[in-house]
Every structure is written in structure tokens, then in C-alpha cells.
Amino acid sequence: MIIPFYQVDAFTDQLFSGNPAAISPLDYWLSDEQLQNIAAENNLSETAFIRKRDHLYEIRWFTPNSEVELCGHATLAAAHVLFKHLQTKGDHLIFESAYSGLLEVTRDNEMLTLNFPIDHIEPALPPDHLFEGLGKRAQEVWKGKTDYLLFYPSQEDIEEIMPDFGILKKIDARGIMITAPGYDCDFVSRFFAPRVAVNEDPVTGSAHTTLVPFWAHRMNKLNFDARQLSARGGNLKCKLMGDRVLISGQAITYLTGSINLSFSKSE
Image (cartoon, rainbow, N blue to C red; front, side, top):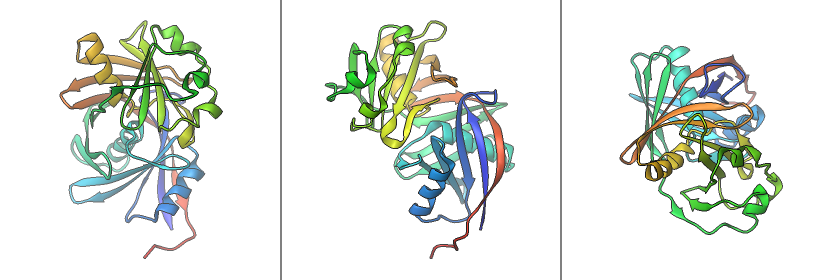
């Protein structure tokens, strides 16, 4: 059995930056175990599987050790594959996800824009060992559906943090995002998710469903230029629209190929 494989750098127009994702279009759904094994073998922060159904595409996202409810950069990468490699007509795509509902992607020349639901956050007490794992105490702690958000006063704070991933892995959350005002952009962030086998994610689209409402309230504005300060780095343009967030960026293909599976179609 041969499955198409694309590796795409998302939220960048330059190879070797942004966030790499693996994308595999399927004719039918494999078992959960098979999907997870493929993602583990790919060993990227996310592998997205897509399947066409009528006018939309079903989508699922896997880290090397678990399925997740939402992933921005792999959805952006999936749209890039559909537009650039599979010659999907038009400039609008609809993805259907099991946990996050319908997700739209539009194309404007080389820019792709995700339309995602916002995350609702509340002030939270820091869980045990959170600040120990980060090595620096935050001014504020918030909690969304799956992640913690920590506010720091300066970009230097974000740059200087050296996480202990062994400690952070014990925190009961998908991920921990840290954020501060940016020097050359509205805000900067980093995202740590060792609990789902992603120590530091290069560019996390889904985190901006939390970050954008947070900064919109704090800065009293709706449009943002954001940068994720990972080693690879990535730039995002974001806009708050009621209970939705528009997250825009580019993508570039690094690798095309195929996955050769020896097992037969599941019943």
C-alpha cells in the first residue's frame, strides 16, 4: 500500500524555517494505531491526515505520541498541499475535524489564512513545579481548553527562558505558551509541549487562538503581527473576528514522496 507524503514548512516562505509538518492524503481511514505509528515514524511535531468527502476534507492531527484536537501549522500545510500539489480548484477549503468543528482556509496569492474558533481562557493558579520547569516566574497565569498561557513583561524574558522539559512533561496540559510584547511586532511567544512529545514547537498556529484574544483585550486592537521565537522562528498575521481568529502565513514544500505500508486495508 502506497500513501502520498509531503513535508511542508509552514508559517514561512523560506526552507528550514517555520514549522515542518507531514501531510498524507488518504482514500480511506486507517486504524488509529496505524495513523499513530506513521506519525511516530515521521517524528515531526505534527502529521496531518486528510480525506476528501463531498465538498470538504476530513482532517486529523497526530504528534509522535498522541492525537490532538487542533493544529494550525499542519492545517496550513495541508491546504498548501491541496492547492499546490493536488490542484484543488478555487481559493477556499473546508476541513472537518472531530473536536474543533469546521475549519476554513482561504488563499490570496501565496498567503493562506486559517479561520479557527477562539480559545476561552480564565485566570489560573500555577500548577506545581510550573515555574521551576521554566526557571522564571510569570506575572500572570491563564488556562484555556488544553494549554496554559503565561504572561511576561518583556521579549527578553521569553528569549532567556531555558525550560526543563522533564519537569514540564509532568504538567497536566497539552502545552505551555509564554508571551510578551515584541520589539518589532505586537507580541512574541514560545510554546512547549513535552507531554505530547514536542519539547518546543517551532510555530504553533493553534496557540494563537488563545494568544490573539488575550492580546486583543490587553491592547484594545484586533489586528496583530506576531512572531514565535523558536530556533526556526515563524511569522503570523492574526485578526480577531468575534469568536473566530484569522491566522495567516505562507508555506513551502521541502519534500515529496510516498509511504510504503506492508499491511492491508482495515476492515
